[in-house]
Image (cartoon, rainbow, N blue to C red; front, side):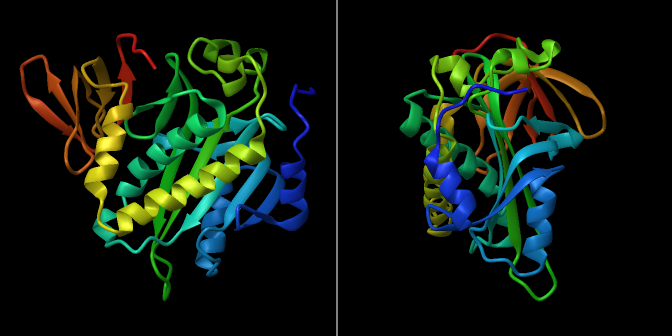
Length: 271
């Protein structure tokens, strides 16, 4: 099936040169998971900033064992190798920083202003268009590495999504009424991610938190989450604390610190 897109000389140049925005690129026509490829490269000592980009991804890794499928010529499936100068206990902060970076990149290129659903989803008009997954590793004899995998629906038409997902997901094309250059988006994402990681390395996690809170679509909304022990809990989001953990007040007034789990919003939100 041929999907509508636009001429994108920057994409062709990236494939030909193996580089975009100064970052080395390994381009794959198809792969199951760019994160798997990037983690393997990182263990072999591949340079920080390296990107693994796939035209089609069939089993992209998501949180809690979920998968993200990227259709050819319409989306972005990319993993970035990072070796941030951070203590191991602070590596989880990368997820929040990258979320802010992706929102800034999308806004800069398209003028659309996404919102963030904790911990790693980007939304537009109540529908998800982008997800990410950060995976840390500590290869023997090498600096600890974080691989950030990103799946974004750029020019994907609604008809390309499974029917059962069409009310829940969207693309930049569907939200704006036009197609966008994937290479421009990717280059801007690389720049913004590098900038936000540098802010973390300089000790400005508080600034990242403030930026994340300004984009939060969950604050004050009723939600349910599935705890790590399989318990379904209902409560109202109180935003994130100073460590980036989600705070939820349950129906008994108890405030929970949510470290991980599947979050589902029960009421509509604006972004």
